[in-house]
Image (cartoon, rainbow, N blue to C red; front, top):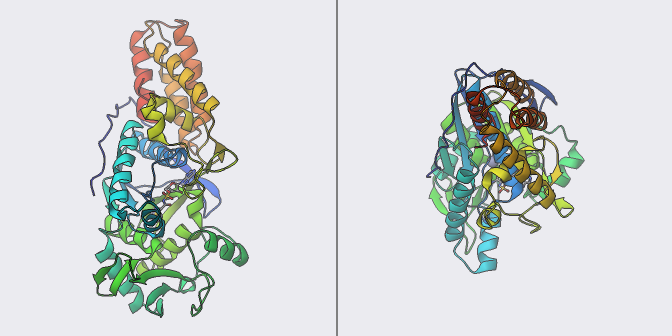
Length: 407
Ligand code: 5CA
Ligand code: ZN
């Protein structure tokens, strides 16, 4: 489906450092090792409601990965999905008495608008689950040929332990896996399954639900195989980063990694990268709980999207944190100070500041430290503690290219 428009990205002098990121699977920070083209897949939204601050924080975090790779001289091939058919969407459609397709199209359009306003670089391929159905059927057929799929009634399940390394992403014990699986869309208690953790790859048509005709019959895809199919189709067997929020580590990325490993005979993901959960009013912000602050609502009330972005990146991407109006006010103040500094006729040389920004970003995207660096520069520039107007412009370009904040 249609992606969204590309923000302008200034080219900076010199080059960024190789990017190291925390890998959930290895439980440590280690360097990413992309070739000339860095490959990244980030799980997209399920479009049954508007983009909230948690989604925005996650997509902005991976946008920083994209920008750091660009700055280090790589081309970036970025792919994202839209889960435009799944249970939550159908449930919302029934609740609202609306067509599920209309909801999905409306919320996806709003998401594109939010991402554009937040200066998030678009994926090269933005693919809906519905578009990917023929491909999903193909991969499920391949899994069947490998003996990794069995049926329960007319639904098809992937036997997760056909991947000897199942569990390598989240490192959870079986009890925790079972509990989390039940909470996050799984069905551990369904009678007839060989192992309670086995996951649905194809669901036979249910009465009153949409279904598609494929070689597997009349039905729709399971969740995890959707992302496997889209990622393998567009990025091939090797991805530098598979990303999403930390709620996706298990079961989604665990199951996806196992399905991809059985399909390809190799480990496909170099880094599993997970952003922390953003909360609001004491709980993780979630569509199911309904405790949401929407990007679009703030934008429509006149808040500068750059202030929203700055409020998001004031937190390190891996920590869980709570959205507060106070945090947004701080970001508005900071933005106006930086904007004033970028107009300074007598700014200090930007090179040492740019070098420090690059250093902190390359070390697992330490944005709070990067913001400190820019604050220090902005104070000096505002005090006209330098001699160059060009330096102010170049620092503005650095903030734009690396942080996605347009001054
Ligand atoms: N469509 C699936 C992924 S294939 C999905 O999880 N959709 S979602 O709409 O629920 O979430 C979209 C992205 O936002 C995911 O990466 C998810 O991990 C992330 N996310 C959801 N809630 C939060 C939150 N409160 N804080 C941070 N990230 C979040
Ligand atoms: Zn996904």
